[in-house]
Image 1 (tube, rainbow, N blue to C red):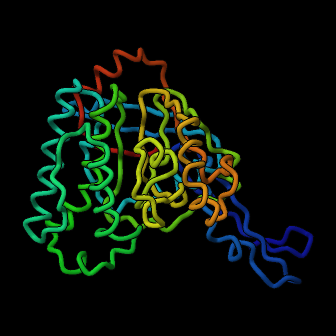
Image 2: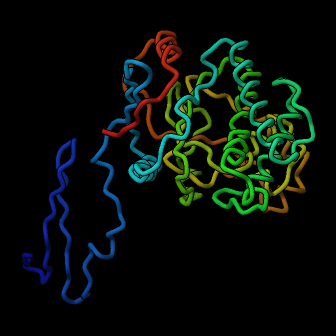
Image 3: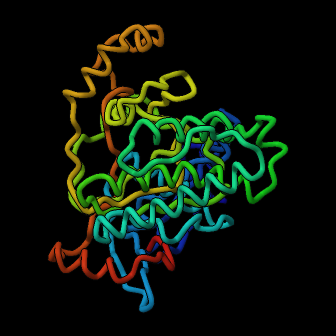
Length: 334
C-alpha cells in the first residue's frame, strides 16, 4: 500500500484479460475511513474485458461472430452472461423460420400436441382441443393455460405445479414455446433463433430510463437482443394476437432481463396502428395501471440490442448456412 501525497493510501490491481489489461487503483482516505473498493466492490468492470460474442452452430461449429455494442444495456447483459456458467442451455434447437412453412407447421403441430397429451394425461386441464396453427384464439387459450398453471416469473407456487411430476412441468413450460412456434409457423418466414439458460433466476430489471433511452423500435438485421423473459405478453403481443384473455397475469411489459437473447435475421416492423387500437379498446384496463399514455416506454414495442454482426455477410448465404446447422453448440464472449 502506498501514499499518494494527499493522505490517501492506495493499492494497484492489474487484471489480465484476453483483450489486454485493466489497471484499477483502490483508494483509502484516512479522514473518510472507508475504502472506495469496499464501497464499489459490486461494480463489474466489463467494458474493456469483452468485445465480441461468438456462437458456434452445427456439425462443424460454424462461428457466428458479433460485435458488442457500447451501451449500458450491453454492460448489464454481460454481467448476466458471466453469471450463467452453472446453467445449461435450455434448448439448443430453438430455431424458427429457417425451414419451409410446411415443415415449420409440422414441427410446431407435433410439439404442441405432445405437450397437451403429457399435461392432460396427468390431469385434464386443457378442455379445448387443438385445431391448427392458424387458430390464434386457440393459441391464446393455450397460452393462458400456461400462464395460470405455470405461475408467475420465478414464482412457480401453484398447487398444480407443486404436485406435477418433472415430465409434466417440462411439458407445461414447453407449451409456451410450442404456442410461439405455432404462431411463427403461421406467419411469413421470419428466421430467428433463441438462447435461454434453464433455471437461471430472472431477478434483474432494466431501469425505466435505460428502457426509454436505449430501446429501439427496429434493430438492424442480425442484431442480438435481450429476450423477453416474463410470463405473459406485452401490449404488442396482445394486439398481434387480439388476445381477449387480458388480465394482470397476462399483461407483462418488458421489465426483467437475463442472459437470454434472441437473434432476428429480419428487420421487425411493429404495427403501431393495431397496438393503439387494442390499447384504446382496453383503455380502462391500462389506465387503471397508470398507463394513460400510449407512448409510455412500458407499452411501446422496444427491443434492446446488445450486439451486431461483426462481418458483412451476404444475407441469403448466411441464412443458408444457418439452415443447415440448426443447433447451438457453444456461446461465449471474447
